[in-house]
Image (cartoon, rainbow, N blue to C red; front, side):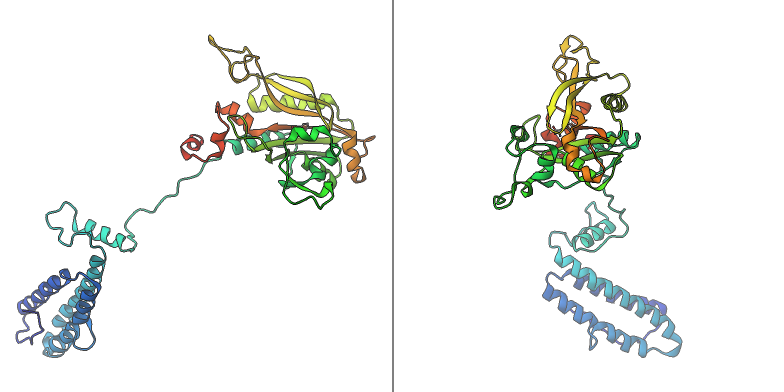
Length: 390
Ligand code: PHE
């Protein structure tokens, strides 16, 4: 038979205990029977409705009807009942929302606490007794790390960091760097152009910068000589991706302009930087080359830091240097006077100043330094690969 509140005739401690126990037992059974929202509403109203709910009845019949001397004791029981009823109503709601969690867990291996915790979590409650969720600390990407290390080598020599836009105009990427319009040297850059620019004069057309060298011009336009800058950044070329090419890659550029800068300064600076970066035993070698914006131009090699310059690894051949004992690291040269002509008005009179510039591929250096054999690994975002630098 359904539970109903009856009048108390005996207000002794034992009688109160008995009456409460009878109520709790009914409360437990009815809570366990709740299986849907409709059930739960009926259950809630039966126990808690302001009008005629069991709780208000307990208050009226038990507490208000109690003789003066028993009021305190009855009040304590009523408070406890109120608390238990509220818990049971809230708990029943959680349970019917999680049909997969068995209501009867007696005899199962999980404790009441664990059972409640799991149920609460599934219902979207926060369990404040659990330890907080710790975000894994990220690690510097190997290419970025390489760039930072190289940049700091030059910062120690008094260079400051400059940057410029990745979407560049033809003027800065080519013209002001002494690539005349239609000059064949432009073809070597495999340029990616922004579409729909035909209506504009050539020098204003937008492209993805193919090298960091346009920042040389941008910086000389705003800073008067003497200057010493390093420029780390991304560049793009229309190269199909393979183990050693990526249409997006990274360069670190350098530029020093002052009075009386010589090719000796270029060699000394770069030789020092390579020893700082790769270790004091590496040697450097300069071979003639061509860039429109430097004259003379050179390619710089470092002695292979993998085989020590021998071209051999034990009885095997050294792959990174292709057995030559030397690895090509960068392009460099003395700033061509024609380049200074474009920024002459900002103090770069080619008769008064001279300078050197260099540019290296950061990805290639990272590949060599960390012994990675495919540049794609740097960019396809596989955390298992990147975690090696954590
Ligand atoms: N910008 C050249 C390149 O990308 C490298 C370079 C920079 C050469 C500065 C000379 C001076 O190939």
